[in-house]
Amino acid sequence: MKIKISNELVPLNLITLLLILVITLFPESTTLRIILGLPFILFLPGYTFISALFPRKKDLDSIERMALSFGLSIAITPLIGLILNYTPWGIRLGPILYSLSLFILITSVISWWRRNQYSEEERFSIELNLTQPILGGSLLDRVLSIILIIAIISSVITLIYVIATPKVGERFTEFYILGPEGMAENYPQLLSLGEEGKVILGIINREHEPTSYQVEIKIGEGESKVVASVVLAHDQKFEDTIIFVPERVGESLKVLFTLHKNRETEPDREKITLHLWVDVRE
Image 1: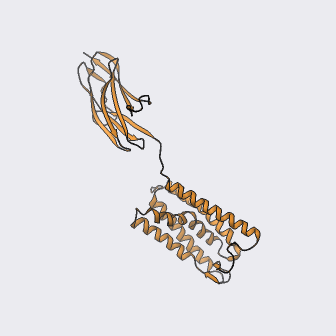
Image 2: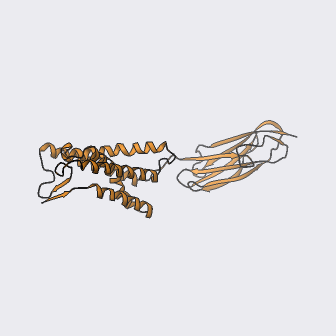
Image 3: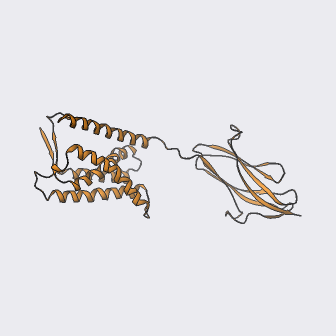
């Protein structure tokens, strides 16, 4: 029993349309995104491109067509992303989705038009012979088919693993001081003895885990004093106005701010320091 599909480009474009609808209407549906997104990225761009280049049966055999479809898809998708990187839209889900969809649609139309230049017998079409073994043909054909299947399965498994595995970026903490107006300017530089100096202290946790912070301030050779203690979740921000009062006269006194992370459990952990230089007069 043979099954012949004369225009397989229609269901392939329907997959593209369905993926757009799923992403638009069901943004939280991760499973559907993966099921529809894998062929959309790994197969459809290359397949429609190959179909536009080689519209006849005799141009390529099935194994070559499948292999080139996957290979070209892996090349086309990053290339479109590279082009988007130099546009105002950038590399984001929406622009990539619609750019690839437009590419698939355009190459499908070109393929349909080119196929119509030939007779029905010459045009490429998908023919499934259900009575013939799946890995029929010569020994070379069977070996190539097995290699192709293994390569496809490996690519899909790798992509699923990359998507499913949580990505932990670089771990760090942002620590900064700003002037009284919240800008990186107008820091206190000249104070009278006993006069208050004010700065805004800021901490942003990028450690991908809750982290406790303690900030100490030390003026010149004086004693260190704790001015802030806080526990922040990942991406949480802390800002507070810090007031310090110099206790002795001097030029270019160093106002040192030291940030300790998880001091209770990791006392020897590397510290982060910032400083200002202040002249103090009577």
